[in-house]
Amino acid sequence: MISIIQAAGWPIWPLIACSIVALALIVERLLTLRYSRIVPSSLVDEVMSVTRASLPGADVVNKLAASSALGQVLAAGLKSVIAEPRITEEALRQSFENAGRRAVHGLERYLNTLGSIATAAPLLGLLGTVVGMIEIFAAQGPTGAAANPEQLARGISIALYNTAFGLIVAIPSLMFYRFFRGRVDEFTLEMEQAAERLVPHLMRFAVRTPPQ
Image (cartoon, rainbow, N blue to C red; front, side):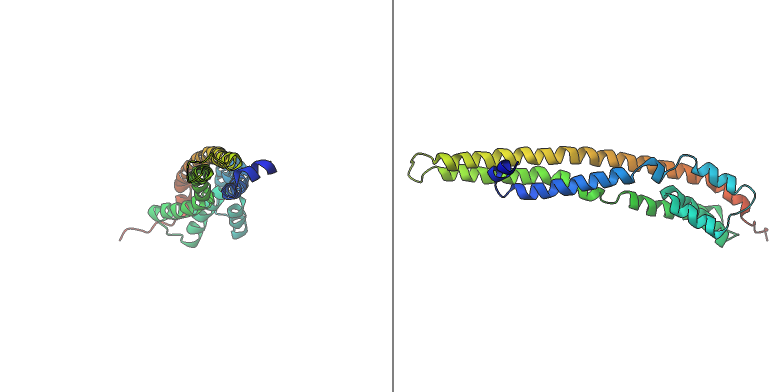
């Protein structure tokens, strides 16, 4: 591996840095974007069961908010109803929507960086290719003399190794970026459906303002 890096020249170092960052982001997102941590399957039913007769206390709501991303969204709705007993359905939906935006923003953390690496890695590989081509042309003597074999081989190594390594970094990064984007979209839909289920349930506790 060390000999390959030496043969690829300095252009490979930015690619190595990108590969390390991409690997760290992929592992972090795989550990974070799990169903059990984001949208536990039975959480909505548990919330509806707890709030069947009355609204829960502040400690229960805070514990719900700390449990998962979906818990944050549901807890925001509960806090809105507790804080404003005369809340309207529109205001409650807005509260869920604002909390959902914050939750989705957290789910999208680092995805732009991973997408940028997937885009930049082939360009860095192309840069290495250009540097290698320059080395190849430099191996040719200015007066048409025979090419320097050592410099010619070095130019070919730089061109090929950087091109290959750029693709090796870019392809998995792009695949995981698309995978994570799809999972975030799925989680977003799950949270929207959960909020829709909870809105009419919580509106039962809202105090109706009598018509004037």
